[in-house]
Structures are given as C-alpha cells and as structure tokens.
Image 1: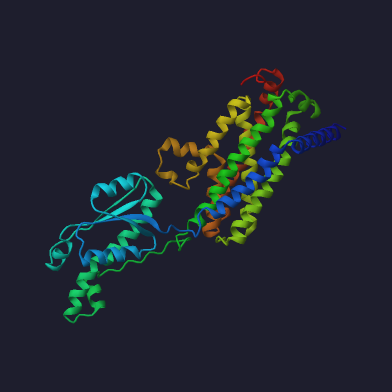
Image 2: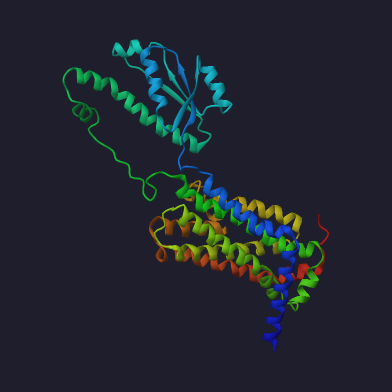
Length: 394
C-alpha cells in the first residue's frame, strides 16, 4: 500500500513538473534550443580543423632580390599569410600589439651582400605567444620554413660543385626525424576539442537548470505545494522533478555523439555504446552535483552564480586545455571534485584507443558515487525548504 502511495506521488510530481515545463518558454529554450545551438556551435567553430592564413607581417630592411624572394616563399606557407609589409620594427610591433598580425619576420640590412659573401646571416621573427594556440601553430610553421631556407644556400653551393642534392642533405642532416602524431595524425582541432568542449558547455547548462528548477520552487514560494504533492518525501520530490530533464539531456548528449562521430566522422574505435553510456553517467552525475551544491545554500540568486563559476572551471579542470599533472597539486586534487574531469578521462580512453574497462572503471565508479552526497543532503534541503528563510533572499 505504501509502495503504491509513493508511486502515485512520484507520478503526480512528474505530471506537475511537465505542466511547469510546458507553461514557460524558458524551459524549451534551456532544454532544447540551447543544447542544439551548442552542438551546432562546437561542430562548426573549428572550420577545416586546422589554422590557416594567420596574418603575419614582414619587415624587409634589405629590399634586394634575395630578400623579396624570401618574402615570396614566406607567402606560400599555408599556415600564415603575409598581411602587411612594414618599413621599420616599431610599425610591426605596434601592429602585433593591436592584433592586426600575430607574428612578424625581419630580414636585416645587408642580407643579400652577407649571403653572397658567405657571412653569417640572421633572420629574426617575433610571435604573439600570449595566444598559446596561435603561437604554437606559427612557431611550428616558421621553424619548418626557415629550416628549408637555411639549407638552400648550401644546396646551391654544393650543386655548383657537382654534388647531388641528396648527398648534401645527408651530410648536413645525417639524422632524419619523423613525427607521427598518435590518434590525431592530421593535427585536426575538431578531433580532440569538439567532444570535450561540447560537454563542458552542456555541464554548465545542466548545473544551472538543475539549480533553477529546484530553486524556483523556493523563490516563487511553491515549495510546500511541491513537497505535499510528493507526500512530503524529498527523495520522491527531487527525483520526479529532475527526471524529465535527465531524459531530455541524455537524448541531447546521445544526439551530439551521433553528430560528432556519425556525421562529422570523428574517429571512434569503440562504437557508440561505451561513449553513450559514459554520456548517461556524466549527465546523472552532473545533476547530482547540482543538487548537492544547491542544497548547501538553497538561495537561488546566490547559488546560480556559484553554479556558473563551478561549471566554467570545467574547461580548465577537465585537463583538455592544460595537462592536470602539470598543475599545482592543490588544483590537481581539486579537479577530482568535478564530474567533467572523470567524464573527459573516460572519453579520451574510449576515443584514443578503446581502453574501456581496465582504465575507466575508477572514473565510472566516481561518477556513480556523485549520487550519494546528493541523496545524503536531501534532508537538509527539505528542512531548508520548509523553513521559508531562503524565499526572500535577493
């Protein structure tokens, strides 16, 4: 009899929440429109997957046929584009400060005469390295370009003496280096950033929506009616209330996986089942995390700001943009508190080598354990709700 009563209460809370969702356009926006926009945004933001035509400048202080030839060769590098030429260093520096260009190359005075006189010549280049991704791309492209420029005079001189080009290169560079980027040989940004960044954005949405749908009951003084509908059972009230959002976000997560791995053809070794299971775990863990944070201090106006900050930290503490092991120990261990860190660890093992169970079971268990503190703090949430002291906090 008691089980039937709880079942009826669960259904009543669920119907009540569905009516609330239908009655306000806000819910349609945050549950459907915003996740779909994030999918579109993250699957198109990286374009072709690599940086091309990054604007750089050229400071030609020599203005000779040899220096102009260097400029023409530099213009053929696909990563960069010679956007402007400058007559002095100050102009180029000012342009890089204004972000009109992201690097500039200096061809010094007497470049051609020193080259023909077989004297040492230095071509300097400066890169805007505050923008790390752009700086790394430009440095790699310019180093490769100038390595070829450096060899050109030696190859020309050796060829004039009857030595073959292969012999000259083998003498100058006796050791050949081969680079084989694992799991992402094309160095495509889409492959390693699209999936984690989408779910970082989704994490922020889930946290804020979870806090809002519970907090709005307190804010708009409907919490007592919510609990009475649930038979004063806070577990029934919370789970029935959040269930529609759980289902919607799971559908959105699985759809995002289909778009990324099915339509965009991002490499996926393991098939859709493991990646979708990790997505389901992540969404439930994130909702539980949101319930826990809100229950600590259930004042909507304040906790929304806290949720935004916590969600935004996921971009850093997931280890996508900077390796966690290289961070300060305090930050490294703090990252274990965030569901997105464990989710990204699981997905990287799935995507980069199909290392599913042996390497992922600990992270999967931690995601499941997020449910426990949320359940333990529900009595505090019920007590705070019935006290009415958080209803008028602005």
